[in-house]
Length: 477
Image 1 (cartoon, helix red, strand yellow):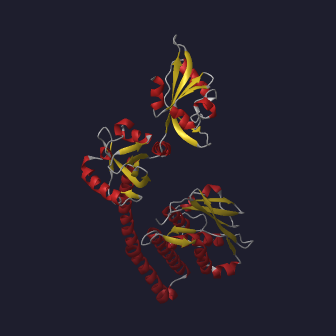
Image 2: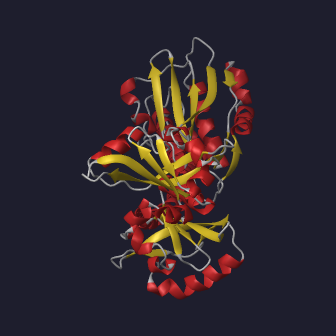
Image 3: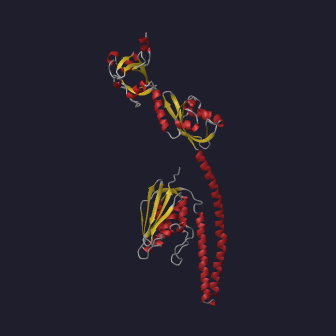
């Protein structure tokens, strides 16, 4: 009777001694391996079954000897046709009349394709950085990963088989159910909730902002939907802080625009009057002024003209980045335009400009051109009088940014001034030696800041300077 029962079961059953030699197998065991009982008795069990989970056959024996239970082990077996298949095996001790372990029983159950796919899917889910929830067509949760437990505060057994709406705030339930039906009728990979706020609900009832990506999965058991769920609480906090900062920045920009208007009108107007009346004095009364009077008039004209240039420079500085848009900028084309602008000066000073292959970036073209104009213009202006200016422009990719270098062989700058030179109206040389307002490098810093980069200088007196700046690689998307 006992033998009949064992032979009628669907599970393959093997009896083994402690050396893993087969001393019994039922009909299902013979069918599983494709051998007769006579062919199997006395052969070693390890010929057919592999240790896929690295449990170690010796460890299995040792565990059973200490009366410790073993959970089912996933493994592979090889049948008579040399085909490899998956199985789940439960090992148990066989004891004699004195309770001493004399052998091992092995109950083998085939692993279905669904179970194998489920196992692989679970392994993949656990490697995902996001909470992964797989739902069937009825909206029931069939698989989750550890991140889901951590994010929502549920244990796996509390979620499997439950409706996915368990993880959704009450106020979104009606919307979600309606859209779940639409999605399952026409499934496709997409980000969920574009243009709207999405929230998840923890076991505690707390709602939190999420980002969700959906993907359909075709299986033998029907279509499943994979949802990758990311907690964006920190991002939302940063976005609010940025929004607040941007509002403050907009307010400051408006104040700056108002100041720029005053600078371009209210301050320029009296300066134009002074220049106009100084011109009239010179034209109508120059014969009545002595040498000292003419000298004073010259000083007034010079000072007023310089003041006008300073105000214009300030106005230009305030306008950087306004009324413009991000676009694709070919730096090679920009450099060609800059060289054309400087062509007369280049020929006059015998300057040499070498430009390496430059990138196409996403930025503000007018400002990028002004940046190169200022750096190359300074390199020509502050050249060593004993040799022609040699200027080189190059770029390299570094950690997601483009790093540019404009180097020259000019007079150089003392290291203590490496920060001062980028401050507005800071000049290192007297106006009689070098023309300018001292605002060019301040323009450069503001333009680089506008592109999310930084600018710095390396220099040695008498040997030249290298100006480096980075442009953050923004994409158009």
